[in-house]
Image (cartoon, rainbow, N blue to C red; front, side, top):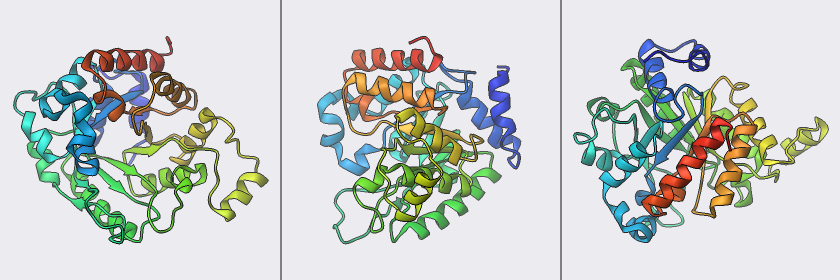
Length: 309
């Protein structure tokens, strides 16, 4: 399939990358209902590690089956499906080549003690991604955690290996830990900082949370006020995070978070679109709904990103 001019322009921004990595990015950008638009919707299903099976899937029992998520992503015409090793292996043969996949190579769990520090275990390898035909690896870092330095060093090594084997890297950059207040996890100065850190680490696709208008860091707050940086609306805050990702030279998508009303999901997508973001990575807000409702919602999100809604 010939890539669109929009996709070619996006790929041209990755000047230091191998043809293999660019090919994998192109594969995702040219797949599904948003192919060629430069926009993406990705289905991530790694919440079982973080929250446990019942909290993740009991509300829609079909979602206990990894095949359910493959089918949902394929039938919804999404750009990619992201999951840890086990779920991808569970459907790798049945769904081979039907949708680009992202192997989530590290994960946390909620059974750890509150004093253990915010961290994630490495649970898969680049060779696993290669064996399963994945387009990318996905890795979470926790800026603000006392373990954050170790996580950054881990992804630097894995990114280098992945790039050498023609596989792209997605970094989930989620501020949390000892250095971050609860409100600070989504404060706009912290969110923009997290996006910039992921870009500095070499992420090809950056995943962050939508920011609020809260400012956590006193030194940053002064700059925001002195320079009159617009953070008044969600679209303005998205624009600022895009600017922080090398002035839009890196693909940046925003997570949907916990399940919420459909109108909130749509409002978020419009803000991402209007702020120049590349799209949504939306898990619980899709698979915790019935298949019929999820497909209808995802179809409307596609229309929003195409500018027809």
